[in-house]
Image (tube, rainbow, N blue to C red; front, side, top):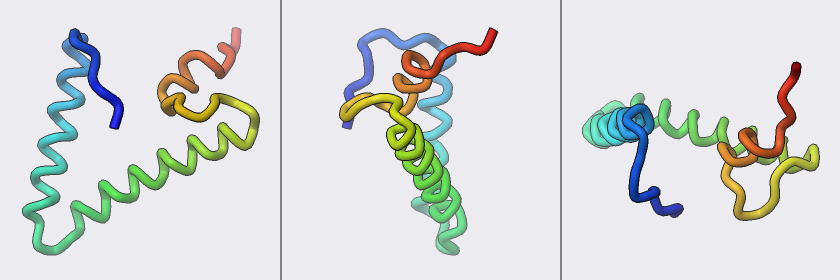
Length: 76
């Protein structure tokens, strides 16, 4: 698991906390619906990362966010 940088901007920290809360809530959901929804998000991200790799973007060890930030050209 990648480590978090020492200093985070407030927006990122807010998103991290939001996801932590969702994960905690999902773990308490006895219907499994919340966990299913979180799993779907993770699967979609993994598939998006694989598609980018298949198209020649990124490399092993580069996160999905880093790939999108640094490998995908801007459209001007």
